[in-house]
Amino acid sequence: MSLLSSTTALLGKELRTEFRSRELLTTTVVFILMVIVLFSFTFDPTYNESRRFGPGLLWLAFLFAASLMLQPCFLREQNNDTLSALRLSVSDPFAIFLAKLIANTLFLLFTEVLMLPIFAVLYNVPVLRVLGQLLLVFFLGSLGVSIAGTALSAISAQARMRELLLPLLLLPLLTPVLVASTQVTVGLLDASPFLEWKGVGFLVVFDVIFLTALWLFGEYLLEE
Image (cartoon, rainbow, N blue to C red):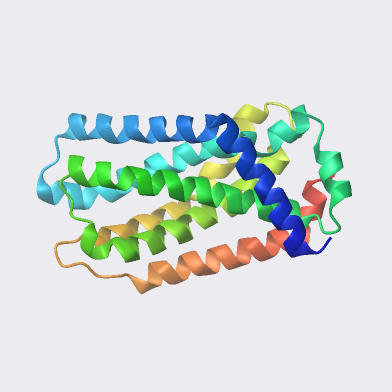
């Protein structure tokens, strides 16, 4: 099977598995909702404070929720002993990573778009006029989180203390993505919205570099 056909087949498997159980999406949505609501009542933010602190809280919630979502990415393949079967069914091991990171990106985007109106209401921040640009930032940030998180999930799934290892590796690695995404979001939610192209460019470069590294070395991450 070619890379495209293998990725499509495996992506369909990932989507069917998740939408059949809805475990990851439900957990992630509830977690983000609790964080956003809790901080809104704790800080009782004013209009100006929401523009300054809201984006950081939003991306911090996305990051911790992503760590919950990415944890079982390869772990369930280990538990069901299906990773070897997946490797034998495709000619290019990168298809396994590509399908999983696409699925993870779609799941993250779904939860982010779902939570955005709630964030806008609770923090009194208008988002409609910059919605397209916000979705671009969400996509680039979520893609970076998914690429790095999928690779680290493959590593941690075969290690001891796997539940602790992934967050310890993921959070420091994704700090640049979190900072860049937050800075761009702050600019978009400013009283005079602007798109910080340096931050967008950094996210693009990060995604390309890590995706290339995953393509080159992903096969070694699947070795037991």
